[in-house]
Image 1: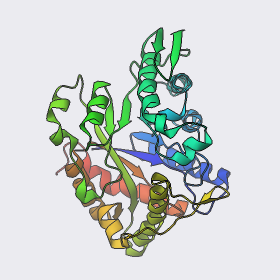
Image 2: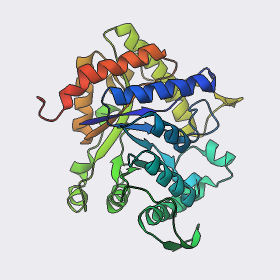
Image 3: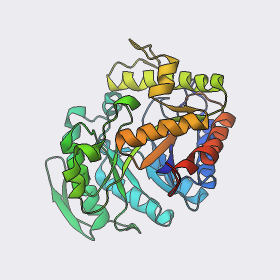
Image 4: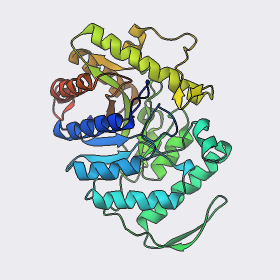
Length: 344
């Protein structure tokens, strides 16, 4: 299994942006030094849930601060943007990074964001489907046109052209819905999935839809991500789980359109039937001793059929020193167990 790092850049207390961005840059550079293969940056708007509202701007900066690690947005909520602007920015980052770009794409789910951008969230599926078509045409053809319901584009050429042809594409899918998996595979994409379900209830898309994978034009990767904290101390792991609880409360309130926001700070409202710290550690995170983390990752690998995993190390208000120590322990004591040829 291959490992990358995911940056959400959240701050429950609303710390200064310069501090949050400085931490993100330090984590990005540490990711390269520690041997992670990819670095992904989120996109969210108008809340302290994430300070990264323009991931492609940040990635252009990180392209100059790194040399080897591959870089990508995870994800661009394509329904919120004009696809040609996204295509131009992606192409520019691929050029600036020397061909290190990967693309993560999804519809977006937070009505709070759609409303503030003046976009009807109910039209998102239609916009998303057409935007995916346009993005593929713009990045992979010298000239194209498009005539759809949401977008009509006369003959157009993209400048700059990306270095990679094609740029690796990852799409968010729901493995319980065959049509989303089929669409992603038909578009030549890898899959991002299984980030919300308890580890004990993950579904293996390869096992569920063997015909789709067998009929793919190229090998399809299955990726996922979780919050990760490696520590020999049980109290430290429990602290990380409590920080993860803040994230869970906020994420679910946004997903259900029940958020409460005061001056851009979102309230972490307690949820009915909240899991205990023990359940969070057992079924939602990869946290604890290196041995425990290896076991959790084996469960995810088997349950999802995953061959790629993103580590979300920056959890809530965990101190930066603890985050960097966790990354070092993961690279030293966990990743080698999943190297090619390592004992299973």
